[in-house]
Image (cartoon, rainbow, N blue to C red; front, side):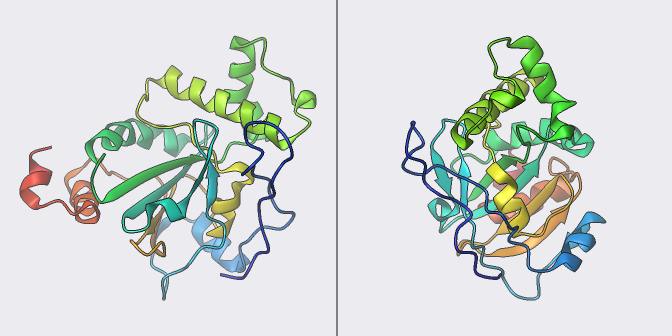
Length: 232
């Protein structure tokens, strides 16, 4: 992947000041053709492992996480959005899987790509969130990245709680940095990282992770034996 100077910049105030995120003016995807291909959905295997340049995301607690934190483990990045029908089909199973694979060699890392002023989001969860939370700022009041991030974290947590998905953290891919890094165009999208932090497989579209075939695949990533997987 091409070098990107930085998709993030520090802000001078607030709890996120040290590691605040801000989207770069240009997406990191170097191959528009790949974005078109991924939009069709399916399974993809890069000809060689891809090392991402953008590695940071906004954690549910307001801190900044990094893919570097998971070196030595397999990671499934799950990009989702509140307006994504396929995500709503898949996320109930993912909620259960988050608990099942806790403490294993597999990290399931859901990342919302909702944006505070995204028309798709505004018509869906963020509109509902503002309706239920009168204190939530209107779009024109979100005048800084810090305010946008705070709003998105609150909205995503509210949405997940509304759905009863208590194990899915309200992480946000702010500015869609990682989503763009992997040239993704549709959701849900799943990028599998090896223990070296390199992308080795990509699944686009809702996946039956809770079915036997899906569980066997995840068990392999998690380092579970067949017997351990069957006992779940």
